[in-house]
Image (cartoon, rainbow, N blue to C red; front, side):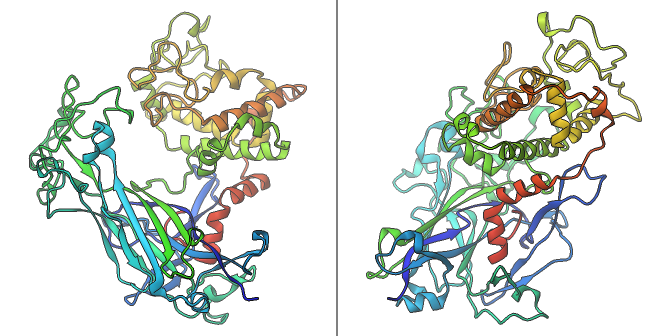
Length: 571
């Protein structure tokens, strides 16, 4: 019996697009172990197979020899590709016997389906002003979703408008106007050439083409990173006593000033904390009127189905999500909270799942976390953060004696020489021409060392209880710290930074439970016999084999996209 399409799915199911003013998309790249011992991170980036879209909608695979992130002053946008895949099997067969294959025009033809039968819907929305004010009429996006057929290979703009039914007096985007949120394009497939040693992209890897130009794929291109507002936003504006500038170019200052976003004020009870992150909140701290400005970021849902009665059923509808964010100015640094951590944090009881892990698995996750912590820290000016956000310490938060010879400014403030949480073994030098960022330099040195699993293991064994004191539990705010983000904080890790909800930055629940379980296991063992200064003498090591394997597991889905069809932009 002939195999038929049992299920459709889009690969990848989630992608991140990044705004950019350039009209040239960012070439693909991947994370690799840094070969440079002077690098500030454990990773760096190198070019990967990319797709250049031709005038007829086909793609040409290229492997750049270098990476260019800007064109003059304009940043190149990250424009992800998506591929359509299917699970095929005999009718009525066990799903475990199905196999996953890329969807090609020939596969559709064998099912009695044409490209025109593929219906793709793109629904893109921006909810920021709506959430800030709890007014649904202030959202904007595609009403109804953009619809594209599978044989339409032209780039189609995604134009955002105000919701239908909103009276003209309250429409934020006036009738006849729109905000571009980017564009969407289906790529034109072409026959896959035979492997050719002179064309590296045709070579097979694990039995599949390195780059498959026959698979049906489509691309989401984000907007340019513009701002839109009412007519007044094209006039000079002076925030925080700084220089005057117009927040919005005159050509984009067409929003309705009476819609309810201009003049809105920060509200600590708003559902989207922090409440004051909008243009205008810096004008008058006691008033905080919104200027009525919005941007062209969005989140989108892409849905594809087959418009053929014989095949149209719920299982033959696939979907993917795309999130549009600002440019990444440090693409060779990994955030300490990865996408894998985000998913694990939402998967259930993290403490129970951590308890079921093998010691090897736990080691791999902990090392990955501390490598990411180091790379995040390498971007941070800790000295500046401390000056702005350090708490004045009193009582039991002060050590019985200051750290001898420590020259840190304001010693009674968080992370100063009198802070009881500071390690008294390290006296830091004063700010000078030769040492411009003493705290930042010291933190990078220590975390570079602790990103090595064996160094971290020694540290925990020799300092029982210290990590539990230093690291905040998830969403923890201490005595005197405001969970709303107003005021100063202690040096509990991560120090002086804010979460997306404006409270002190913390690990995810999954990460914290995992780390504390690992620490408990280490502290239950006999303390290592090595002298305390072993860590100070230990040279920083490159990524271990275990860390490399962990990274590959975390990036497994993206690796499959890279092998079977590049996705444009960063992994």
